[in-house]
Image 1 (cartoon, rainbow, N blue to C red):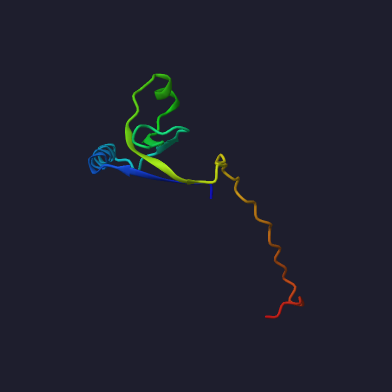
Image 2: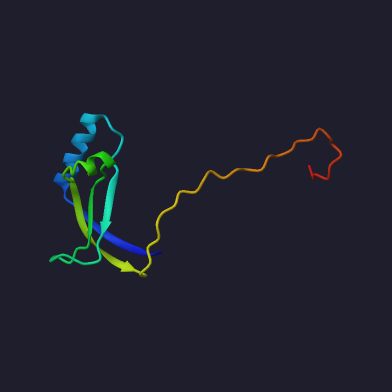
Length: 104
């Protein structure tokens, strides 16, 4: 385990997010979590906002901030998440030969 952080999201923000999801008929929302090296005046170093597309970032569209928090445990090491390729399973060979050593 590398780090743990607590994040607080106001009920009003959750209600706005749910209203938007319902209007757009979406199943969920992707969030981005930003962990900063330095804390703000409230001791917070984590912020969460609705993820943006590359085009939205390039157009400098304003982020919709969802909540803030702080890291409360870390071992000093955070690694980048890597998606593993689908595991290829070995093919099972079935034989019509009943003289095998199977116990059943």
